[in-house]
Amino acid sequence: MVSVFSQKAINIMKSIPAGKVCTYGQIAALAGNHRGARQVVRLLNSFWEKENLPWHRIVNSKGTISLRAGDGYEYQKSLLEAEGVEFDAQDKIDLGRFLWKPVIP
DNA sequence: CAACTGACGATAG
DNA sequence: CCTATCGCCAGTT
Image (tube, rainbow, N blue to C red; front, side):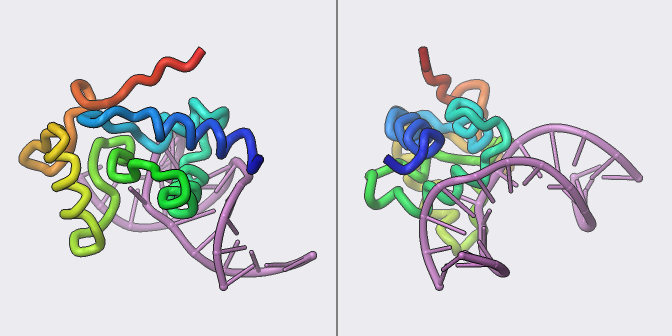
């Protein structure tokens, strides 16, 4: 038991299907804190290897990858493209088509 | 145990 | 479009 927020966020992230992406704010809001995007970042960096989270499916609210080129940016992009996610000329994802909308009761 | 750290978001200018 | 600021708080040092 870490925290309710962490568990929910982790649960949500583990549920993201291939070919879809999620935003930090969305996960934070679903986990109970609409302003907890930074906590989501912390959780990802701390639990992605322990919980086997698909960190590459998490992007910022604009649908762009937050990492800088050379710092994993191209790697994440390639992973997403391999799952069917498309990037436009501005290297951003069309959230209208690829944003995953989880079903939380 | 106190301070620091963040792959962000929304708002204001 | 851009930069600046505040908010939020678990995990790490």
